[in-house]
Length: 434
Image (tube, rainbow, N blue to C red):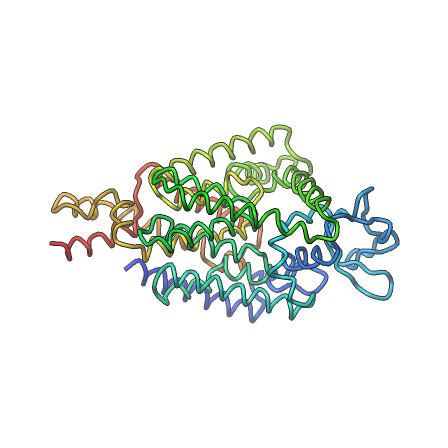
């Protein structure tokens, strides 16, 4: 039933969104930007970083002007500060600023073969999206996860073109196979964790789940493979390991700069409260970093509890909180979790539903008693998935809606445990067993 409910609801929501997008009504203004805006922004940054390198040469850009604002380019002693479209008076160029030269070398490789054009960007994003959907179908062993292409995280990432596509695909395979009794699957999962972490760094914390079922071979393989993916490509960079140092410095400063703009955790709620209360939001609140660190700490706690319970939603949600500066394109990491919960293996369902499959009348009554929670979880998942967020409210509201929905799902898991989809499926499994 949850599969059908989510599927039909997503089709209906997408249909409304598509009509609104086609007609340009009720605030549809944020997807598919025109050139000079943010269209394919997360494709341009790594793609042009591939060409321009990590080490800046500010003297080359000092006479250029911002295309949209028609003002001189913002340059510091190191490099262009912000990534954007600029012109020298005759041609337009996308310049990757040092604040955005934060992608590991391995994350540049997939986008490098695609030309630095709109067509090239959408070809990259479409191909990466197909790979991501294929990984969901592999994880779920069903074609039905294709429907998640109608969701807001998928649509938004199609327009942004962020390399998170491949990292999220690898995270899904890791979570589905990490404890598989088949050795090649467990090793493939370890390799996928290495790829995901090398591309986006944050997924490395998901490896904590290995401590609940220690297997030394996958752990060592994953660690060694990740190290190779992170460091070996720098031997082939024209600036050598100086480029690695520049990337680490850029990433550190970028992280501190945008931490207050995190879309997950307490920071988003505090920023929203300040807006609602009419407080000054033109500069960071002095206590913002305290809130940020507390939010990250709570994320790590949720991550560890999730690993102990093998609750993938808590793990991934905790990862998003702990990362501190991941924007809501990172909701893509939640889609494999949903697929695993909807189509997971029976053993995993029994584990995550608290053993509800094992018994008789008492366990079945517990399943019936969870129906109210099941409905709430379905609604919260739809809040995360609905493309209508983009039409009606725009990106800023998406951040609030997605964050609150994720917090709601995590809160239910922390208090009640289990997962509603597993509990519903357990009823069917129990019937088959008895």
